[in-house]
Structures are given as C-alpha cells and as structure tokens.
Length: 193
Image (tube, rainbow, N blue to C red; front, side, top):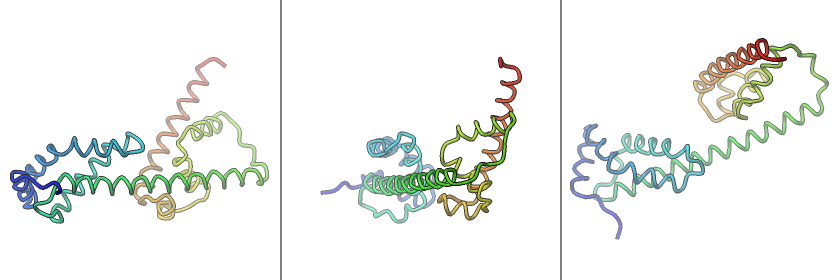
C-alpha cells in the first residue's frame, strides 16, 4: 500500500515531538537528500532547492504534532515541500506580473510626460547607471519609495513582502548604490577619459 514509518524512526519522531532537538536532527539527516532531490526535480530555478528544503524541515519541526504516527514521514515531508514550492512559484509569478505592469506604467509615463528637468553631472550619471544595473524588483522598490513617495507598509503590500523587508532592503540598496556611485566616480576621475 503506502509507505510507513520504520519503528526506529517512529521513536525518533516521538522524541522530536517531545522537544528532543537531537532526535529531529537525526530525522533531518535521514531525509535531507531525498527532500533536496524531490525539490530539485520540480524547482524552476536551482536557487530554490536549498531554500525550499530548509523551509520544509522548519515547517516539519514546528508542526511535527500534526504528523500521523504510522504513516510515512518521507511522504509527509514531500507534501510539505510540494506545497512550499507551489507557493513560491505562485509568489514569483505574481512578482513577475507586477514587474511587467510596472515596466508598462513607466514606459507609458515616459512616453507622455514632458521632458524631465536637466539632471546632469557625473554623480547623477553614475547613480543612473548604478540604478539601471539593479534587478527589476529593486528598481521597482526604489520607484515606489522615492518616485511615488510611498510608505514602507504600502510598498510591502504591493511587493508581497513585510515592511521590515522593505526597510532593510532599502537600507542595503542605499549602501550598495553609494558604493557603486563612489566606485564609478573614482574610476572616471582616475581612469582614462
């Protein structure tokens, strides 16, 4: 019929349910390769393999009390991984659709808006180049914050993230852009014209 849990594994599960972290660690070691392989065969990008595998075991640890004793832990872990992967793919699709809509809005806005005021100078050029090199989601974040003057909570809802993620990412982006601009300016000052 279906897979079942081996008696020694059942003892590990009972111990892990009772709070024994070492017992859960043994279960992770027993099933990690299988979960990673399961995810790898279904993930649209390799970067998701470790992330989904990790999240699978985090979810399993937090919800081990929901596991039905006598059934297959491996099958339960596969179901968790499958659900997490499906949610991540759906989130990515929503994000991609949002980026396309954003790009369309920007293109439409630029095609009908009056000429922007003269923004010239090496600092502005360096900043523009650094921003152009950012991934689309990061450019969207900058536009929402600085172009549209939105608050972190509103941006978080639009980007399907947390407000803390928005604030942290903006902080890191500002640091990254500052370093990029300084690097470009020092290259243009010291390099050949």
